Image (cartoon, rainbow, N blue to C red; front, side, top):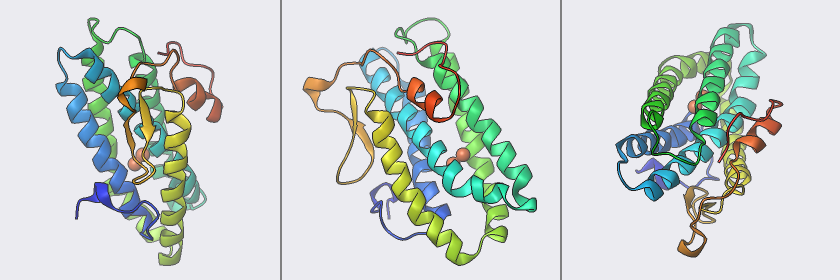
Amino acid sequence: MNTFLQPFGATRLIFDAIRESHDLQRDLCRKLTASRSDMAARELLFLQLKVELMAHAAAEERFLYVHLLMEDGGLDASRHALHEHHEVDELLDELSVRDKKQDGWIGTAKLLSFKVRHHLKEEESKFFQVAGRLLSDMKKEQLGRRYAKEIVRMRKHYAAEFQSVAVSLASGLVKPAKPEANKPAARGSADAGATLRGRSKPRRTL
Ligand SMILES: [Fe+2]
Ligand SMILES: [Fe+2]
């Protein structure tokens, strides 16, 4: 079954729910780094990826890593993962400039893609195993339900900062908005993300 099409409210273990977003992130990274002359398409792909990464990190921190942090055996994995989330945030801030054709932009986008792929692989091959040992089956199901609701809520929260992306009511996924509203917004969602996470405002936003 295509994981993109799973109902977002269905009961699943936390790891299954998280993998759905991981697959989306890999797909968007691949499309973004392959983007060439069509700057409108590049802009849209970047915003979709940015919203997905920020929503996923928030939901994952709240409904996986907070619970691992409370276990002695989960400290190293959760600290490492949160550090990598912060590195991804910084690259998103750096890429949130109006001119995405400028020298170095696609190189930084490729670095972001590399970091994201590294992080996802580490979570799936190491951190999920740590969590699998530390969390009960009932907890994994409960966290899966809460994560699935939270990521949709956070996608809506971050997507609301842009006119060109929206969250589908049917799937709960980030999609391009209707063509008539398909113009870049004046500000980026990094401000909202920074506020939510208690950070200072990013250096550059859209
Ligand atoms: Fe993560
Ligand atoms: Fe993740």
